[in-house]
Length: 517
Image (spheres, rainbow, N blue to C red):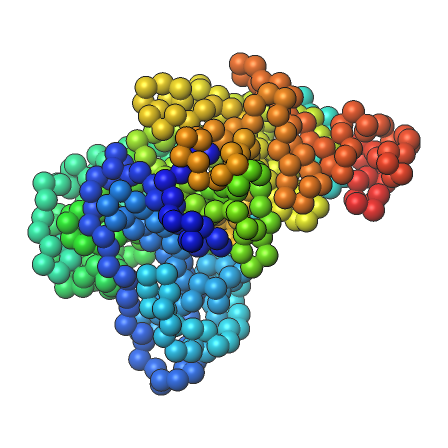
């Protein structure tokens, strides 16, 4: 899987950033300055503040490379305080907390406040599917969605759907921060671009998520500059009378030469929480990507390892593995270039808009249908014994993904069965894995991520194997083995021992978990 990447010295650890081509998506955008926010007035040194944890996706571009970062903030009375993201790992966005702050320290591009202590006051609301994953162990694959599946520890499940059918209203503002000068963009032109992004989300979610431009405001001068995006949003909100709330989004467009980041979007705690966006471009991919953050989605990145398909994470990725920002070229929450096909099943599941999901914890044989389709099993969620979650989908060159293998696919992506992993540090973030790894993760000639028929993928624990048994038009048969046990070894309740343990199928009381696995 080829990447244009940073020097080898920066390859280790989760913050490693891949240099990615973006000229076709955004054009040349100036390097953005570090974000800053004036801290609320409070006593210096160990000050105690109450507020809400917020996260902001910052897309930066310098020349032909782009890097992404999810920054953490405390929304406190009087302003936003940038926090050390490591201090709030595991604290969901939207959580009300009491934080005792430490000194300012250097972050990844920004000055942030260290956190000496943090106490949860009110848990965050959440409507995302990741908040309530299905209990798969020992369950039975039944119903139309389970067609073609034979499994132990597998369950056909549609993720919780969007809580309510509502149109997300988007207010657009052409903004001029500081001394920036207007470009040729007009409210009508920006509205048309936003409508294209809205059509993407409506089509990819079967209409369950709909955006509509409710107001478009012409060029508006703002006193706040690009180094204070919260101040820009607050000032614009006050100037035009925007009222934040559920299903409401404020999107600022700034000229590419204004010096702002190429894209900014608040990562909302739920699908319907609303949010804020800033963009320095108007491509469909960019607008759809930032609005996706407002729906609660993180980035679709990639994990590439030298000669292996998966890595272990213990305070950082195992040696030889590179975490690459925007490394998933198949998904709009990844690089968001000129081809935006189906939303990955990992991201669709998180939104709660995916039917045809099979949750797997034991030996399974399942027939996957195209991710762009509307029937059958379209996604496997495989839980490894060590707790890691892998998502398997079949993405042929059909439907919304018909661009694969055509001249527009200048990246040279291959259709097929893809394996992703939920990031162990951040469940909003998805990692595309290279199922056909090269000896070097940075091999510039390797763009080949999907499994090939007859090929297997082994998880980092070594206990789960995912094999593509066969692939034909409209269907891919995938076999999951666990601890050396394959679906062929699985028998009906009351059957024999396999490797010294009882292995059963369906709703037998012994089931897989009870067998000591």
